[in-house]
Image (cartoon, rainbow, N blue to C red; front, side):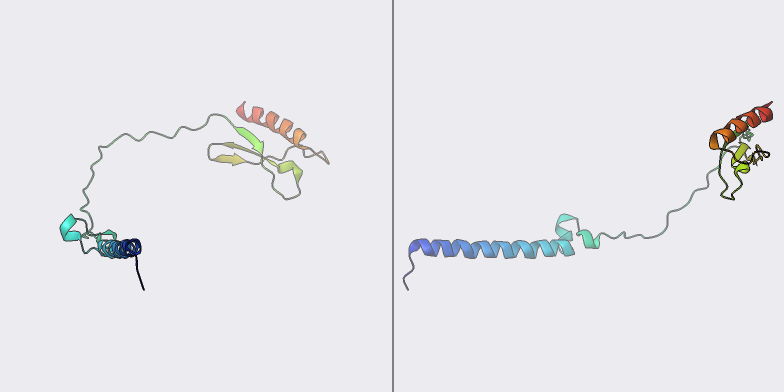
Length: 131
């Protein structure tokens, strides 16, 4: 069992590397758990709790009286394609002005109407509503 000087140096360096790695892992674990908080002022991510866990004090906000402005009402009607899925093609257009909505029956005498026919009639109906 003859060990040369080179083998002893390599064995010593390996032992020192394992020792350094072990100390690093131990130190990192202790830091993570917060054992070094007294030294660094930081107690690690697990012990980062707030000491005073009371709810904040609410302050009353006083808002000066402001005149209430009326909501602007649209001044014109808009008609748009809105199919109803009730197999009645004549009511597939809706017209609205703000919150007011109507669903006219357009082209009631026609037995078959297309999208283009309905939108043409809707534009005419819209023009009548907006007078």
